[in-house]
Length: 415
Image 1: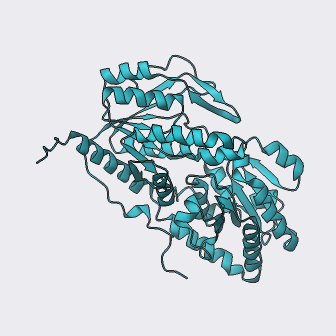
Image 2: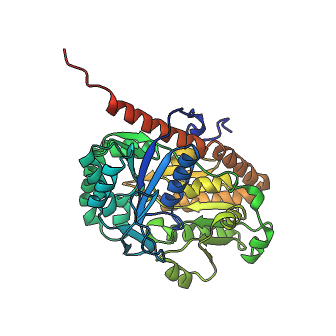
Image 3: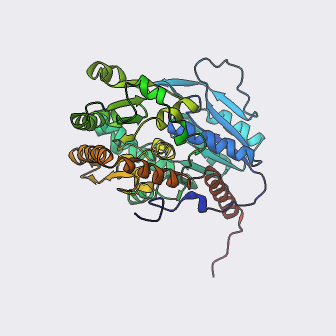
């Protein structure tokens, strides 16, 4: 086996960057307790920056049930009006607020503005920041092109891409989670790109949280293989392909189980179609960690991710991974070391037959060599241990310092 733990260099190699405390504004249209990778990642960054002495102001839409009145733009959390996102129960997009943001930032200027989402609120914040000459960083978190195809809106994809390119190319720096995505965006005309990896909480997500009681509730004995998927139960996750892989495994291992963790618009259809599959709903914190650790194989067929935090959470939990060679799996999964990384063929279309065959090979291999599953899980855990959130936050600090130094440097005369 390769001696390296991960497919790419771990983010823990980034040194901490000393610097004075900064005043940052984060503008986002998703925030905990909403359950998605963007909200989770953003919470980690904001909490980490605040712990390191920075002031971080968050501007976001008011969530369902939050009372009106907490809208002072000089506070460290600003709630603005929003509207529900069709098809995304519990999520909202923020309404434009450029005039209010411009007035607040003129009265109390931040050092930089970090835009997390590209919705109406993000666009208005970009206009406000540009009008005041404030440095702007932006994250790139969602593959809207792939989402458009899954929701039968492929005709919109070129328009959406053009809009995103205009938005991001007006920012001073765009933070991209993987090298492959950065290369893809650069080839499509996106500029000012920087790599900002994702970390994983290896204390929360840990193999020691494995629960025989939870497995028994799923109808699985100690030797019965449990396949798991964690994420939004929605078309863009290619869940029918996960089910297809499970069916192929079950044809050889009749007591195999499949557990879906999460919720979304496809759940009712899938529950009706597959009554033998366990739908555990949304899980959080230690309950989520226990679900991961109690499975035997993490199966992830999505090609719509810009990263996919669930992959590294599963690795930290000691699970072998079955995924396409894309996003987090491309960055961190070594084929046949941490599980299987199936090549992506065609124009961003996965090879379904190869994916299903890889699931069967893993399940059969684990039965023939019981130690193989544990060994792959241990390797996956070792890889995840390199993905430290502290190093990610330090890299973000470094980007902010470099941006501010560049903007404050005096212009050099030609000749």
